[in-house]
Image (cartoon, rainbow, N blue to C red):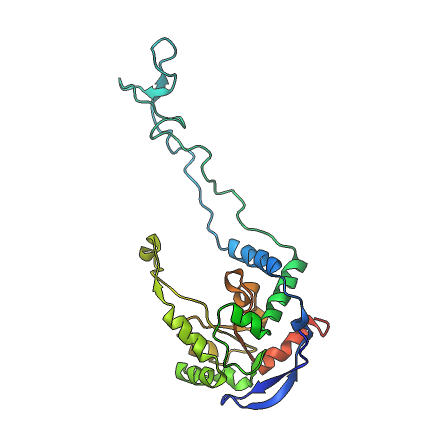
Length: 261
């Protein structure tokens, strides 16, 4: 990014000052590294699953051996010719079933994860990348979008709606509302009937009520700057999420990543 400064807006959407853009926003975009980082984060939430080691083997069986015109499969002892127990038989055991000891969490070197975070941060400062991701950001007047620290103290959802409207962010929340639809498949009866798009991310330095006020807006996430991760900045491995920064959170990026990025 070649931008040197960005405007600071108040809660009425008026420019009240300027801030120097942290050097981290000059990090080159690397979608491949971001994808590996998001996949690694998501893999840590997978629940290990396995099969009972005795499944399909709780049978009293014997093989009739050769000379009976039958295969040598183990068969039920109770006067039946039904083959059981082995992989090739109906109701037999599973071949190579899942085991709980399988390593399903993917690792990523610490430096690569940190670089992915810097790259995902930089993508939020480009209007072209944000719009190409699908966000409605045409009315946003400056990128990165920085707001006065008063936004951290909002207590009501209606206040957050009003601020987003004046900042030009509300059309993206409306896009999320219009995207709500019923999920296909069995997930409907497993507590996740509906799904929707991802909306704006509000990054604050200290939670003074904003997280509670914005939690009822569909698609909107609130995070402190110290708890940011690649998945929040690039949901679904796609970089360029529409992000609103509080002034103090934006300034803290220099402390976190240094003036050299």
